[in-house]
Image 1 (cartoon, rainbow, N blue to C red):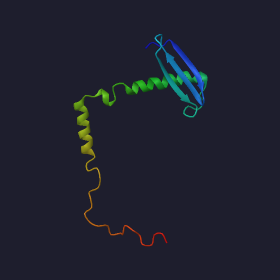
Image 2: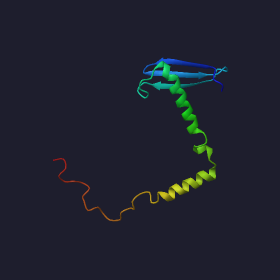
Image 3: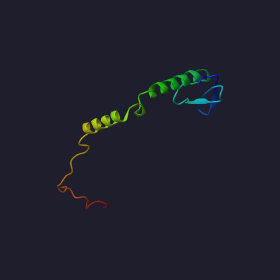
Image 4: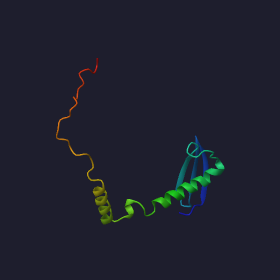
Length: 106
């Protein structure tokens, strides 16, 4: 996608930055003043570019879809071994405290 059109539109509590191409495709980034203090129409474009670039860099080749099934299976096995046992063993004795307090509700 070659960006040929950029629009910054005010929205309640922030801005929407729209990136478009000649074919009519588009990507938009919504920015809120709460998440980005001091946000203005002039700074919205640079913030939107930064967020979009960061999101694309973080998603490229580092997620589960970028790994083959054998690698995922191996990572799952390692994770299961590292967390075994997942909980405390089951107690075979009765609790020494009563489950119902006879004085409750008085």
